[in-house]
Amino acid sequence: MLCGSASAAPGLQCRMRWLQPGQQLQFELHNPGPQALALLRWGSPFEGGWWSPFIRVWHEEQALPYLGAQAKRGEPEAADYLVIGPGQRRRARVRLTDAYELGAPGAYRLEAGWTWHDQGAPALMPRPRQAHQAQSMACGALRWKR
Image 1 (cartoon, rainbow, N blue to C red):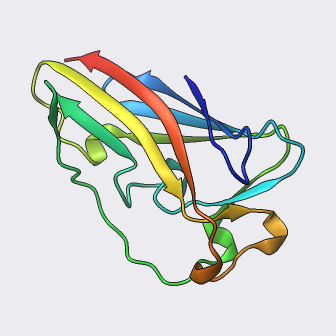
Image 2: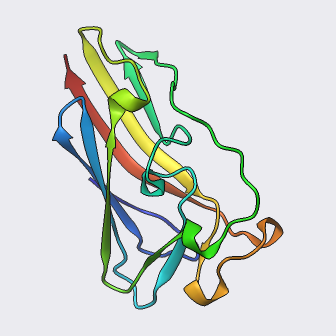
């Protein structure tokens, strides 16, 4: 499932797929544009762990609480940005059970989406919070039964 975003990241695409249904997901970003893009990783699957709920999960149409960590942050550093060049792809994997209780049998649904808290040309990064340019990113939905 591909979903694009608007604004300063035209055409940025996100694809989400199962590696193990109900357990492990892979996210893939693709920058089909002609210029490199820097994305602040915070609160996304590209941060390297669960530091915010970038996926929402429902069981039998009841929202499940997010059980992962939440981070408070200062100003970003250059290493906090993901740089994706023109035509490049970047991938990240996450385990749902690290942030949600998924033991009950029944129908599950998840939606992935987050906000890039800052994004733009790599030469401009990092920049202070007051200069951030946020961009929402939708990455689709999946269903499964346990």
